[in-house]
Length: 474
Ligand code: MN
Ligand code: MN
Image (cartoon, rainbow, N blue to C red):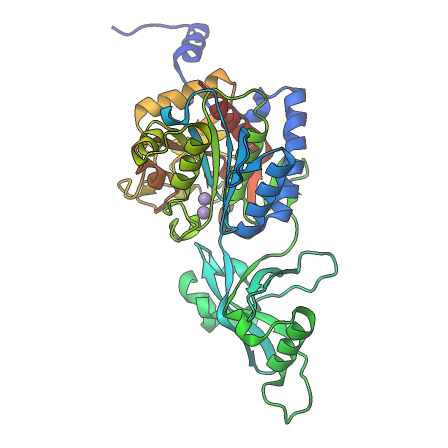
């Protein structure tokens, strides 16, 4: 039989049994809003200092040392530890009341971002100009990297083994490099009638580095030689040193507020340093000793599939948990380590795509995360039929939902685009391989993987709050 309801009754019923996502700005009071804006200032300062995985790892360990964390390799008794892996991935832990073998709370983020790496033989000259050849790292849309100021962040191992770091292009007054693009007048045949992926080729991502010659016309390759001589004078670098170097080109400049209302942050590398920062701050903010040991992991190499000895597929996490066992008990057997990992609960802290107002057609609106609606619980990533996804179970989603609700964390759910549209992956499935519970939770990002990614200060705040609630949970 059809039931009749007054509008008032219908509203009440909907309030009771329906779900309406909340806009964070509507939920926060004046004080919390002020806190969110203040937190974003700290976040921007982190982004400016941590533009590469190496810089992020050392920022995190420096901050931990200031907070009284001890190096887990040292023979000290402490309750807060840090561990660095090859200068590129990091871990922070706070020992809880329960034994480590009964399981820990893990938040895993990544600190690498898409960028342009120098090739090992980068320097050449062409038409009396000097260039560096690059090889892109991670998923970039190549056209976004042309005609913009680029900075370089490098680690060079010299012939004698000496390590040298340099940053060029970030300080006021520093020179920058750039990749020249065609003028519209001549782009017709070369670019405009081609598919975007073919119009901008990887081999054309060559960075303009100089135009001064050394010596007179009789000198061979004198533009290249001039640059080499410049690098030798300032850094003591030789051409062979490029081969034993990692030099990363990233968009130059600092993070900025976006919007006249300053409600958003625009910066390179927010995927996934927004989650890394929120996880780090959440751990630092644990006032009481947590019930369960809290571990924040900061991985490298996520953007190329979590490969390598600093990525989530390496055994770094096992090593850290094994160290935690050793610090807290005499039972450090392989079996106990396996149990500890199996009994653990984790958040794969990574960003998701925000509904793009101008390209809504790539999203399924009812299941897309939106800027300003809080931290997104992403049950699965993957492509098409959830291929390559972790796909968290309902029971665990229930646990996370309770933790967020009890702690007034504004959350939403998100799916990366329409079912058949494309997809992506995170570190979730690599941690899930240890049989632990894990789900993706992170803020939505507009213009993700671009040189100017956009986040909402409201979502950043809720991400921090959500991670803190997870670490504090029973
Ligand atoms: Mn990511
Ligand atoms: Mn990414």
